[in-house]
Amino acid sequence: MIVHKEEIIKKHCYTKLVYERINKKLKTNFSNDESETLIKKILEETTLENYIKKGKNFYISNKQHTIRVTINSNTFRVITVDRITNKLI
Image (cartoon, rainbow, N blue to C red; front, side):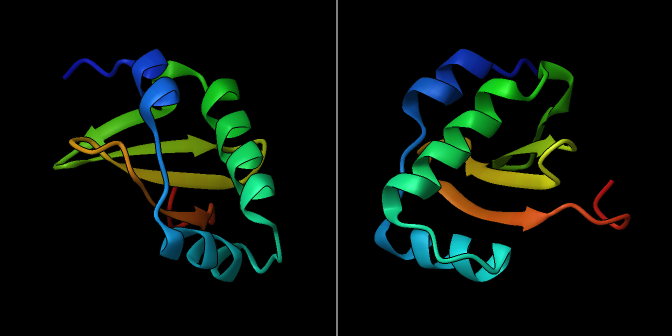
């Protein structure tokens, strides 16, 4: 399966609820803009080999930031983020 990193960076989007989910999962209190900046930075800095399409989602794992971003492959909506632990590697 071919993953188009540039398309994901360009088309990814957010719902109102995902901002709360990002803060909850990362234990932060980011504004919407801060969350978007973080996600975009992760998407841009992560190498293509760490972009995985599994089922209907893309999983982008950035070990430097210890964050995995889940994006719906049809709508390009950010679904959630997770801290990378040994279980997710």
